[in-house]
Amino acid sequence: MTEVAGARGEKEGEMFGEFRDFGKNQVKHFDKIALFYKELHEKQTMEYVKDTRAKYAPLNKKVMTLWDAFTLLETGPIDESDPDIDATQDVHSYQTGEACRRLYPDAKYDWFHLTGFLHDLGKILCHPTFGEPQWASVGDKNPVGCAFSEFIVYPEFFVANPDTKDSRYNTKYGIYEPNCGLHNVLMNYGHDEYLYQVLTGNPCSLPEEALYVIRYHSFYAWHQHNAYDYLCNDKDRQMLFWVKEFQKADLYSKSDKAEDLPDPKKLRPYYESLIKKYFPVEKLKF
Image (cartoon, rainbow, N blue to C red; front, side):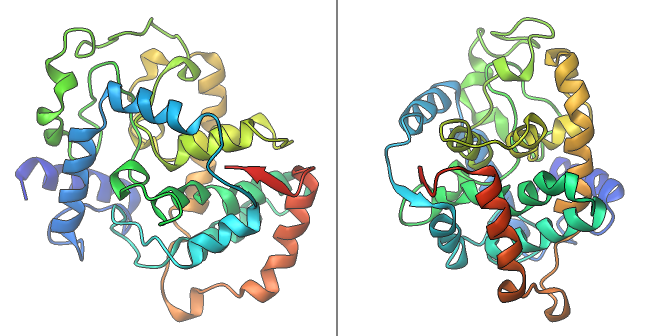
């Protein structure tokens, strides 16, 4: 669509090989993905993020088990922002969980396995049950309330975001202090932040590393390009190790080839056991 978008795609492609190449000649649905990011970057303002976080913070939309929620992924969505596969998110969940198991097979890392399995569960936001548009659920994450980084995918589309013209938000630090820590930074709202809200708002014993992975795994500008490091504190930089490790499982497990598709009947008992271990109550507030 533009030279800038193509250039960004080439840089991403060099880093990730055959994955996350947003260049026009490499992506099956280039125009659709570009339009998705145009809408995402234009509409995710500070005002929108604050309103949407507040909307979902009470966790009063639905009460259900994690498996009930997972079932919603089986009928959609197909992530419009993903240049790599056209599979539903339940397939990707099993693939990522199993990739985490291969990376860290020791039982003491079973939290990492479950993190892989659950990491995209927040995409139920764009299931009809919740009814959010895709730009409000999927896609890369980035801070709002400060200047947008050139390392965000399709950065040229921020030009129509009202925050770029707001003097409170369009400087390097914006509303934040240097090294304030990512926990004090508002991110554009989507599946990462929503699932983080669900897990921290319900009884859950997953470790802090798991919560970091879930909350920031789509923050590619940070964990792949070191953008916004000036907002990070020492804890963020320590946790970055696990976010990067997770990318080996999340990104490189993607495949819609028949031989790579998971067998849910075989795998479900293992993840059921982990859910029982880390979630002391059966039904959660969503």
